[in-house]
Amino acid sequence: MTTAYRPPRDHAWFLRNRNYTVFVARELTSVFVAWAIVFLMIVIDAVLNGGDPAAFAGQPWVIALNVVALAATTFHAVTFLNLAPTATVIRLDGYRLPAWMIQGGNHSAWLLISAVIAYFVLRTP
Amino acid sequence: MSRRRTAEPYLWLLFSGGGVVAALLLPVLVLLFGVLMPLGVLDWPSTTHLTALLDPLPVRLALVAVIVLCLFHAAHRIRHTSEELLGVARFDLFIALLCYGGAIAGGTLAVLLLF
Amino acid sequence: MTEPDAVSGVDGAAKQAGRGANEEGEGTIRRVTEPDAVSGVDGAAKQAGRGANEEGEGTIRRVTEAKHHEVRQTTTRTITLEVTRYRPGQDSAPVLESFDVPLMDDWAVLDGLNYIKDQLDGTLSFRWSCRMGICGSCGMNVNGEPRLTCGTFFTEFGDGPIRIEPLKGFPIIRDLVVEVDDFLDKLRHVKPWLIREGEELPLTTEHAQTPAQLEAYKQYSMCINCMLCYSACPVYVLDPDFLGPAAIALAQRYELDSRDMGDRFDMLNLDEAVWGCTFVGECTKVCPKHVDPAEAIQRYKVTAAMRSILPWSRR
Image (cartoon, rainbow over all chains, first blue to last red; front, top):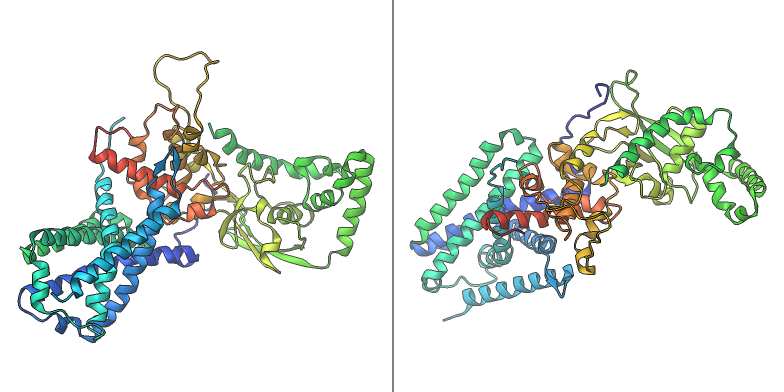
C-alpha cells in the first residue's frame, strides 16, 4: 500500500498515558540503584582504608541524593517484587498459586532481610 | 532452521537476579547509611564494628556478588530505557558496551576494594 | 488456527466498502431486520422494541417506526465525536473532523460512528462486524486509549467530546482503517496450530486433556486478534520488528498445550521476540479478553533463559 499514511515517531510517547510514565519512572529507578552501589562502595572504601564514611555521606548534596535514592529503590522494590508472580508460575496440586501469595511472600522476605541487616549493623557488640 | 545466538537470556538472568538483590537489600542500606546516620537520627557505628562486619570472607564474596548483580541490573535497564526514550536503538551495540562495560568495571573495582 | 477470526477484520472493511450501495433505496425499517447492517439509531430503537419482537414482523415495523420518530424528536442532547479523517490523495496527513451525534445512554462509540455513517457523512470508513466484542474488528483509539468501540459506551465520557483515532502503531489506509498485514504475518509466523510428530492418527482419534492441562493454556487461547495490545505496546509502536504481545501469547498457547509437540524456541528466543519486551505491561491492561500477553512473554523469558543455561532441559 503506497497510499497508507505512516505516522512519524512520537518523541513524547511516555507522556501520553499515565501507565507509560509510571513505567519510565520504574525503569529510571535503575539509575539510583547504580548510584546506591557507588555510594556504598565509597562508604566501604572509607571504612576499610581508614577514612571517615560520615564525612562523605554527611554532605548536603549526598544526603539529598540519598533521600531520592531511598524513594527510588523502595519504588523499585515494590514494583519488582509485585511483578515477580507474572514470570514465576508456581503450581500446587495442579493449580496455580495466586499472585497475592507470591507477592506477600516476597514482601515478607524483604521486611525480614531488612530487619536482619539493620540488626547486624546497629547492634553494639 | 538455523539457531541464532543471542546474549539476551544471560543478560536477562543477571538483570533479574540483580533486581531481586537490589529490591531486598538496597532500601535498608540507603535508609541506614545514606539518610538516617548522616541526618543524626542514628549514630554511626564505630569503624571497628564496621570493619569487623566486613571481615568474614563470605560477607566479602556476597558483597561482590551484590555489587555485580545490581550494576548489571542497572546497566540492562539503562540500556533499554535510553533506547526507548531517546530513540537510539540503532546504536544498541555501542550503548550495550557502555552499560555492561560500566558494570564490569564497577565489579572489578569492588573486587580490588574488598580483597 | 486463528486466521478466520483475523480475516473477519478484512471482511468488515469489504463490507464497509459495500455499505454505500446497500443503503440506497432501502428504507430504515428494512435495515432493522437485517442484523449486520443495523444502524445506530435503529439499534437503539430495536432494543426498546424488543418486547414486541415475538409478535410478528408487522409489530416490529410499527414499534421501530414509532421509536425512530421519537428518538429524532426528543433527543436534544448531543455529544461531539472528533474523528480522524484520512483520505488518500486528498489529505496529506490525518485530520480531525467533529460530528455531533445524539447522546444516548445505551450507545457505544461504534453506534455513534454508525450514526455518522448513516446520517451525516457516508464516506466515513471504519471496520466493524459483530458488535459484541468477539470479532475483534472495531478496535480504535478512544481518547488516546486502544478500545473495542462496540464495548466502549458514551456514558463513560460524560458530555464529551470523544476523540476517535485509528489504532496507533499501524499505517492508516483510510480514516479509521489501519493496515493489518504486518500483524497477520506475525501471527502466521509463530505456527499457531498443533504440531504433531510421528504417524498420523485417524481423524476420529480423541486427544483427551485433564482440566489442569486445559487450564495451562486456556487463558492464552481467548485472543480475538483485535490488535489493541500492539497499539498499546510502546516497544511495537517504536519498532515494528518486535514480534509483539498477541503473537507471543499465541505461541505460548500452543507451547503450553499438552497435545502440541512443536518447539518454538528458535522463533521466540530472539532480540526482536521475547527479549524485545521491556515489560511495560500495557498490553495486559488493554486486552478485552484478559489474555495477559505480558505474563505469557515473561513466562517464556524464564523458559528461554532456563533452556539457554541448561541446554538439555526441554521446558
